[in-house]
Image 1 (cartoon, one colour):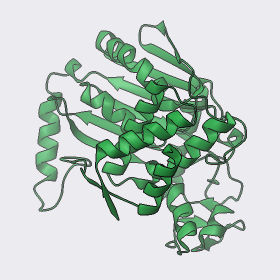
Image 2 (cartoon, helix red, strand yellow):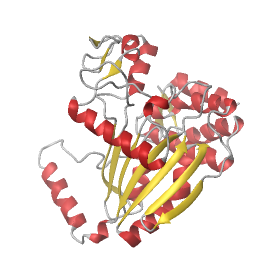
Image 3 (cartoon, one colour):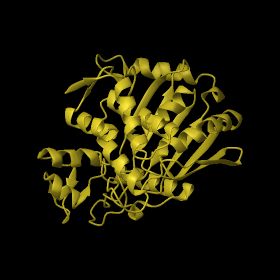
Length: 325
């Protein structure tokens, strides 16, 4: 692994995006997301995606210079039309309005529609929590999951993220997970590395469990907990596509394909103001103390520190430098 500072990752990523057609402010916010992903060890959502971003900027599959349109049709509803640009940029434009709506109403819905894939949802719900709000987010993706007992792929990995503020500008708890046993990126990375995958991650096209990543990509990922994870995945599908006016999973082509129709995906966020319940932070502390009674146990995301410098895949870094020119 190669040791690279966060500042270098951000600078090179932003330069690569600008070189392929992104506006300066758009390149900066997408670089924020890539840098955070790398610094937290989430390589699937970091530099691993940069080449795809750049190629899709060139092909027009993602639009790098659009200005998202923000509206507030109801007191507790904020809509953002991403205009087929980056999700990070659309979210940024709508966040302050959504926070204001949550403060006024107690709870607010931020519906971000018609964007490129958002990759790591925790990047977004984390911003909500650092602003003092409880954040719940979800999105959908290209179809790779069949119903339990079925073979036809209907939904994507459809992740859900949840972030809780600590009342001091930080995060007390955060999880960001797909509704499948494993994220799709781990399958594609295993295939690229020539490695097998653990049994229980996926089934092949005939619905038979497989440890072959290529067979898995031709089959279906397995929902976490079977019907339980499938239910959460469907919940995300209906809320995200239905409430943002964006596409269902079956309408999305492979996310990293350099050409094709824009993703046109949506993300749905719920912002909840903890000040509506004065004892909320006290409750969080009680639960965290109970979790911490066992050595080595902690709340998800508690005390997480972003690495700097960051251990970066040298192949991914060399490609990033090349993309940046």
